[in-house]
Length: 264
Length: 222
Length: 52
Image (tube, rainbow over all chains, first blue to last red; front, side, top):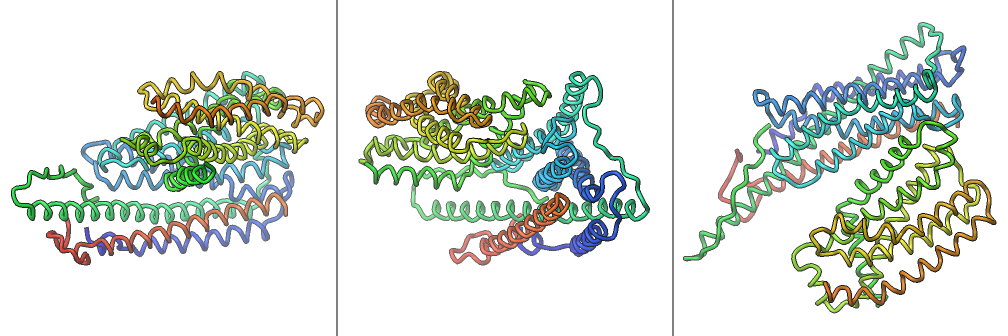
């Protein structure tokens, strides 16, 4: 695979990145300065311009790409390393967003509830999601043939996607039975003025665009890593073969050619 | 012996820096244990706060087993252990070096776990010197006992199930004393907490000495 | 610094740092790929040009 084809940087990705940064800039400007403080939560509501957006990315966009990509890889009709690499890229980006969800959530929760952490369903599921994603990334780093690794990671991703709703439901029930009612009301009580609603929406758009850009770059890194791996394998294989032909009457065993990564 | 210890410690730490298994596997595992134990205890904030010191130490102990297995696995390649033996490095030095490397990882682990219980269970360490002293002493004991038992079970095919079974009962006094010491540290009760150090100190000293003495013979027997 | 400021700062800083690491990783692997291209290798590997 030539460096030229792999390192091609699509224009649309850069555009998305720029738009994302611009949207984010406006979100921050509007969120921190232009919008009024909330009637109930005061300035604390400003975190709601970023926290739910980040959480949506971490839970829904990432889930969609990782699970969808894994399914599409496993399905023989649509099998392609493109889906495997896309899913893997989304899990790493997703871990970053999951961690940010927890941090921004805790910073919002501390002044509101007085504690950094509560064991409510949403926070706990996100924490478990983060741990599961770290596990996936560790699994991904285990050296293996690309096809085997892809299959292994696809199954792992699907299991995570199935597991998180189960965890969420269990923790919710765990809390409800204990408290005899909903444990924590996330307190989304805000009287939204127009500027607040627009900022809220803009935040969603901004973080979604940023996610797409990060996903795109991370995907490119994944492709490049695999390409370099293939290249090094080719070089060492051909060096080995040329060694063998130099040896007269030697019974050197040829290395078993592995089924290397196919083109995406 | 000390020079060899530094050599071996450096080797183990360099391998870890490259592979980053402790960072990306053992640390998340420790946090996972915190979460699972919270599930076991229930969402009542008061119970969790009460159980926090015990949870810290249980998570630490389980993670120690993983760290030991990793420390042993690093040399499980064909002939690596023999090579180490034949290299003329003082076995006591190997022991100290490996224990030091594991100890360092355990210290990092404890920092993460301390942050974890502060964040997740809403507790605060009020008697810092007590918590820190208990942790340092325990780390020496855990690392020395762990590496020793790791050597005992190295090379055995049932190592993965045998090591926890062998080493966890041995580490129980550390769990006991550590939990009590930290409980006192969290409650601001320095006086009662200090007495638990009387268990941690001999434990650390004994396993340090025993390890230095027995590690060599153990390697020969393997 | 208020909780709100901290939240914004952490979120923006983390994403920025992550983005930078991604771009740097991409550049490093691009360079690695160029270096390991068969055409560049002095010891002539028989396979030249586009590998499959």
